Image: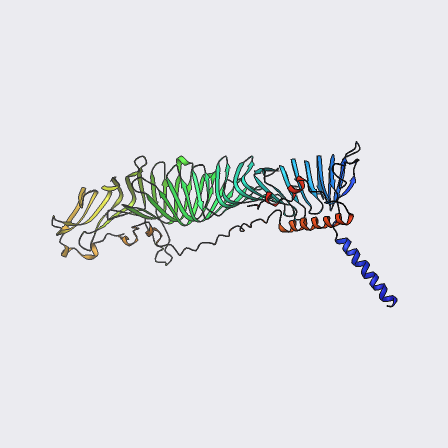
Length: 589
């Protein structure tokens, strides 16, 4: 073998030996020991260190520093027990204090017990017993713990896990976050200490002075007090309850919004509002809702339904007003209506149907369309209509039609229309049915008169100062007051072009006859897709197979070393057994 080859082989052997030593884990190193004690009862494998007046015992291993007043070092196991005023430091971010620590240089698993306090830049964790796996950079407790973060508050739970590389906590079982503004309770909370973001899984509540949030899947930003909730969620604002597929909550602005399948319940005024997008401004006592918006005033005998492009509710609970804007419709079993806008005052019981005025732009619908009310086959219209309800009895009391009042009903048998018009109309209700109508000032009538056998007698066309119309079952009793002129014409002698007053506008085909009919003119509804939170990922075992394999290999290596030295391997202590006892640490879910 020539010299060059021998030289190359020597370099290869040296490199291989160096690589082997480089891969060998470093053993625990005692930087400062104070006093060293050998106890023959503990065996030559165990060394006891006691602090001196100059300082505590200082222990170093793979990037951690540990200080204590007393320590027992098991050399062959590379295992140490630290007692009294124990401090452990990892880098510049993780600091831990406790009464007692067990630490294995082989597995890099530490167990701290007694007044354990782990501090990282954003939070402080306290518990009775804490497991710290330095390989995975995770800490774990299962005997109740508390995390304090200045801006977020205090979090307590029965089980907790801290992922140091992610600055993330996972809290399980009886989780409570207490903040000066609210209290959050859940059974699982993922909390990121750097940004204060919290993710809730399972039934959860956030209770503040003036609000309560319930959700089974949600997110809460504890720094900015905003949240997003997406499963079986609802927000209670005093007397308002908000539900929807997706809820947004801003505590500082007293604001909430909701999307898709929304229900807002006003418990004071017995009103329910539904739709697919809504916003609530609690500080301003107002809300609005769009996308198939529907307001339901719940009454014992017959609820009132109002639909429009947009619904707005304003005012204190005892003085709320509902406004329906654009293409507004209303429905009760015995009455329905249509207008540009509807204005309902819940305290006074006044509901106003507002006139729609548009300039003619060539569009067939860009004409003056008056608000309408249908009741018992009668269509009433005018420039504006007021419905007055008895709030206590929850029933209609009267109605008023202002300016250009027009009442139309179909003749019972023929194809003609009974018509009454005047400047103003006042109607009275009994048991929610219209029984008396007065047409006031410049009243005119076209009426198809029939006898008891429903045979047509003639067509009455008259003028008078006012007209009174009473409904007695299927019959109408008409009284003309201060009649100016009038005559009953045989049908054959009454011109067809004179059978309708100027301004006649029968719109019976527009009458809503069910709640479903309220939406008949709406465009197709396209709802946004709600983006959910990331799915929950179950934790791996805290003491996993990799850690157990390291323990097994370490035990075999130590046994081989002891056999080579010709001495007996001492039996593991009870504490060492507890360190590697897998059943003590369960999955974090």
